[in-house]
Length: 468
Ligand code: FCB
Image: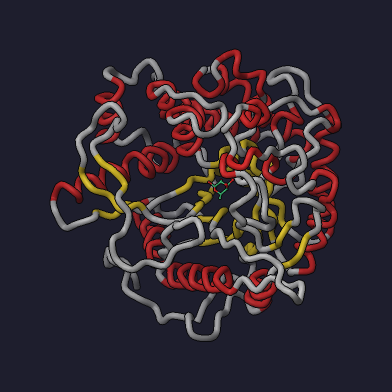
């Protein structure tokens, strides 16, 4: 089966902080992740990103791998603190020279650059105004976006302003598990809002220097009730408001969903009006030419009373039955992926969808023959590509898929243990080894997305009845 459009952007994804290393090169400034990773216990295994995949120096080798695999797109990010070392004001042209070389070389190889502006590495200097909690962050981001677009806008057709605002808000500002390590519920609501406002404002400001399409990448998690009780159904809907609709609605419709706004106001004990000011929702709406979808898994939810450690009346419980899992225990649910894409098509019609992340941790390492037989990643890929084919057959306007990740890399607070790569990286030597899954993916791409064999599934009816 499978009818992917002929110009479908098959590719792979990375982000600057996770692969580049060279934290002092070419006038780079410090980022919030540099400071956070220095805190004892912040990164499992005590690792840091000083070398990572060494991709700031070995980028041509990475591009060679992409070419060899026949990839048509590469999603990567610009390091904000390389371009704006002081957060505001001075633009570091040497950093832009570097990214211009990378982009030109991608174009020469006919690989489409998909460029993320904020993949979590905000300049540390911006913490004097509270990072994303401060409303100044919006202006700082616009300055950076304009600098990037003025220099690179004529050669980039796909821009992603923000990567996963919900994760930044939750892990960075509510739970303190990611940079900048803040635990402040009200602050996290402000951070989330400023990320969206910065998208809207930056998109407007970039239009004069680029014709490229501008979007946000959201990590979307279908929320399913643990039981068929009414309370669990309500918990799943609430969680959907928190994770998904809180971002989708203001970006792709207009304004924040009222039910979730009420949950937030209850949780922080007051109105959100000082954070979400008059005119903000207008500045966020209608500023997205496409939606980036990062999909990993779903959330199985049950009702639970809100309390000191639980701001909202629901909790994640996980599946009880037999479920296939990755090496990090993430539940593998390709049907939920298909249903999500169909839901986006149904509820936010007309917005092109690019799957900007999807992937899994499998710890396979080289065997005696030097190869990496990561059969489970291959199976994962095939099942998720089949799910996309089903979504396309149901009308979902999918334009691309960039697998997370091209390379094993620095997985934030989890350090170097989780390996997401299509390509194995020996972190002692920097050596890259193409895994079997990458070769298999290359074959699928060559065949235009066609998957033959056991797990090429016939079209199925999605649980919400929208298929076909
Ligand atoms: C996403 C991030 C990406 C990577 C993957 C595994 O949340 O955007 O950088 O960490 O998860």
